[in-house]
Image (cartoon, rainbow, N blue to C red; front, top):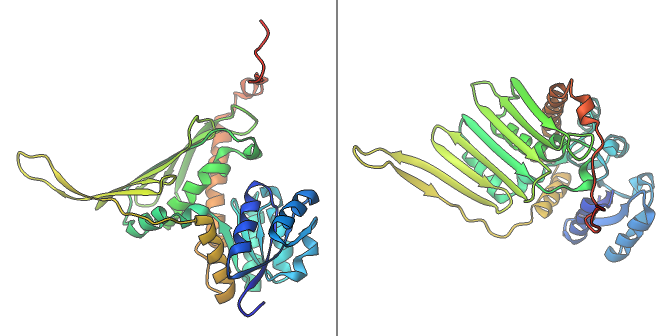
Amino acid sequence: MSADKVRVAVVGVGYLGRFHAEKLARLSGAHLVGVVDSDLERAQSLARDLGVQAFGDHAEVIDQVDAVSVVTPTVSHHRVAMDFLRAGKDVFCEKPLAASLAEADDMVGLAKEGGRILQVGHLERFNPAVEDMLARINAPMFIECNRIAPFKARATDVDVALDLMIHDLDIILAMMKNDPVEIRAVGVPVLGEHADIVNARLEFPGGCVANVTASRLALKDERKMRVFQPDAYLALDFKKRKLLVVNGVEFLPGKKPKVSTQRPRFGKSDPLEKELAAFLECVATRACPRVSGEDGRRALACALEVHRRVQESLKGREELLQAPRHWVDAGRPEAD
């Protein structure tokens, strides 16, 4: 490793991977060696823009780097990450960590065995409003989350629990420390074979309940969380990066209760840049990542259980759900 820069590559430079490469090319702690993509032309186009090398296979770059950012489709996270971990490299892997718990266990186990850094890309942990909220958490009793977004065809290879809801599941697990004792969930596939809208109810030791909804069928983009705990009510807007804290309730006979409200202000922040800079710092110092492989594995386990419960809820409705969808070309009116 360079004395002051971590040699790094990005594997998978589609929509999100391109941003990874652009950030790493600018970060002072990184030396971006190259970008890798099975679509070599795409890799070459980005490599020209950034002044780095392009590769069509990640095996070509393993010996040239100290660390890697894996931003491939989830089904290939295990294969790519394991190759780098076996070679003694540190790995940043986008969420979800893997396609199965067995794969996640392989990755976490090999990283631990080899003393390698394995950080998982749960970006919301680097949202300044989330950072502030997590610092205020004290024995939550009820949590409500809504994460809705317009449909994007690039995410339909998994259901919405693994695509969107997993962000909120990770944050809830970070709050609660313990895993849920019970998970119930329902969902419906609308535009494809995987559920596009899911509602889950998680119950934790001590009685805290989290009600979590995720949808990729909305006409707007909204990401909000509300937390009720003995000493406060916290309302978080992920997208606007705003936090409302209500506490200090004072009851006066014959009058309306008085409450203390706080609205912390957050300066401009780039969560992805912070996340990648934190990874580079962990590589350099060997510190444990804020979102470790174990954390990513917990979030994946929770999302997969939500997925399993959704599949159970759909049993008996297979014929209805397999009915052909009726697509309309918005550019041409339908014939009468």
